[in-house]
Length: 249
Image 1 (tube, rainbow, N blue to C red):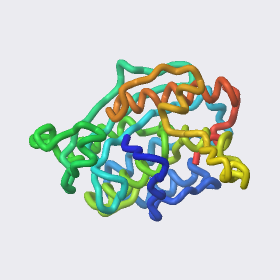
Image 2: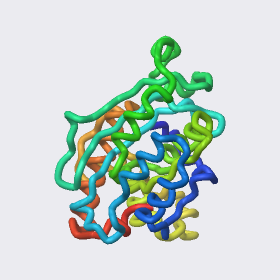
Image 3: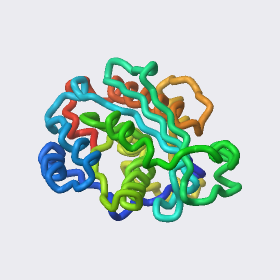
């Protein structure tokens, strides 16, 4: 996951937040509209009802490493997924794919994620593993830390390779932290005293819940870190019976 400094990329306009979306109904509609059989099969798996308690929701923690922050000008270098529920993280079922994007690596991005030209020289295009990725995602709600990466990048990739968009709900652990720590803008006194807002980046958020530090910017490790963070957030601030509609976007 590439998060450089406090300035974060804006969500892709094609995948803007839809907080009022009835996801089961939307998946039913999209299953009828999808032209690519892989997408149609993904949507046919359906989505849990908005009133489903989070403890009963199948979840999939997802993280992308990318060449940059703009989904229209950058590409996906690696994908990590970790299946989970509120009670358990299935690390033994984690998957990791290294991919060759259509966009060139930049020096700054290599410094962040450590993926070099030689690493991806023999890597496949994302189209070779779309079946596997969509199979992993089917029926699960995605868990990410900052939805401005995974949702817009996967959507842009689908449009480029398949000519179709993809829609899916996400629980954004960064957004859950923002609800607590960014509820109101800094006061004039805060600005005069130079007080910085509480960081809601992944590592800083984890530390507030007593979670250990992990080496960042590996897709599977960051997915696992997001999975653990969600478990801690629900235990601390929500309830196992919290409807998923209160958490997803």
